[in-house]
Length: 110
Image 1 (tube, rainbow, N blue to C red):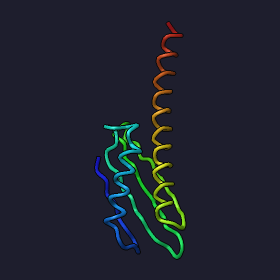
Image 2: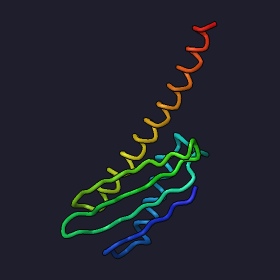
Image 3: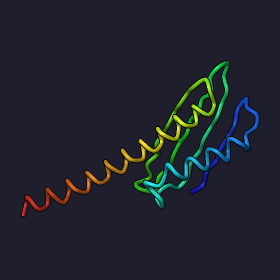
């Protein structure tokens, strides 16, 4: 898994980079080998920190976008990791349910 972190209008990127990498590794335990690339952009507007990410999966070449904003940087990172783990669980649930429905329809036909 390759994580690319970009900061716009932002300082102290190294500390934030380590924190985000640590939290993303914990959040992506749902898909340990299926995540190909993660691009994270942290930008600071007047009073808001905005975190945008694109998560590329190897499964069916799917891209999952995540956007999060908050006044505090640490809170924005926490919201971002929570939202990303929730999105990964949803994607995994959709894949599992599709597998179950396809086998169930084949069994009903026979």
